[in-house]
Amino acid sequence: MLDAQQAAMKPANESFAGALTADELADMENEVEGCVLDMLRALRIEPDHNTRDTPARVARMLVREVFAGRYDEPPELTFFPNVRGALDQIYAVGPIAFSSSCAHHLVPITGRAWVGVLPDDRLIGLSKFHRLTRWIMARPQIQEEATHQLADAVEGALAPRGLAVVVRATHLCCAWRGVRDEPSVMSTSVMRGVLLADSAARAEFMAMIAGMGF
Image (cartoon, rainbow, N blue to C red):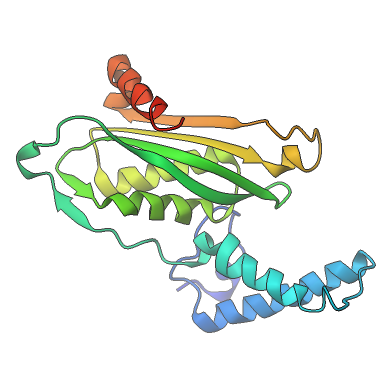
């Protein structure tokens, strides 16, 4: 358990998992509700029949949904043995749909991720790639760092011989404001182990996800 001073602040895309009690999260939600109300009034938006419950809705959304990857425990993983190393080829999972939030403007990022694995001696259930992705992404993020965090999470769980993570996303900080270039898409990737060292293995993975909607 973190002491009060340590628990007060943490970098935007890091996890508080296990450090905050249910009561502390409830207190946080109440505090955020008050801050949202202050923000609305600073914008000269007095709560009316449409917005009177907006501060509570926004606070609940941020703490329990949009930024939940900061406060929720990591997903529980189900492991299976790679019996006799029978699975010795690359496999790919995706597209995995996710929503995140831009750390710079706190507006949505929506995208899809693909994960490629050349396993060693253990496997995880298919749905766990989805759960890990959504846990990592549910924080204020920049896509470059999020891609590395997802790769770290999968690598930590599986210790594979090779790993690839590719993320494609649309950022409302470019579509809703600023340049307002709605079709713009950003792609990022992380390759490790065999999938970094062996260009043929990397090309095999990219060919696989090309047939999976990349």
